[in-house]
Length: 91
Image (cartoon, rainbow, N blue to C red; front, side):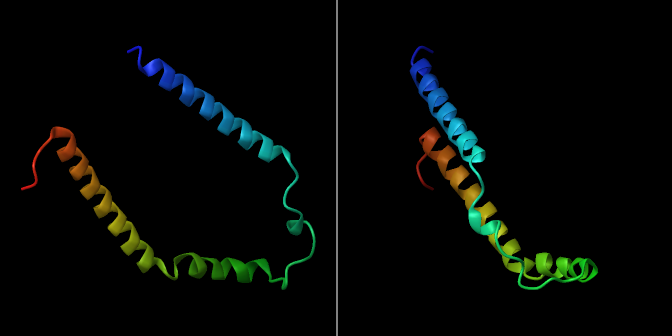
């Protein structure tokens, strides 16, 4: 149990440094290019509301294929890790 204390302390310091960095970044003003200029074209809100579902859901099939592939890969990696942890040989 004593071996975990230095590791926990190091992780706490790293986490604190990361949180401090995030807070410092939030305190600075935003990127200036977003303050200047106007949109290239203004569209009525009704037209944008009608087009929004097509923008979000138009190319959903490749996303679903990628998600299924990642889920299969995660399961395979999990099984391989458990086999290595138990010391089992490959069948």
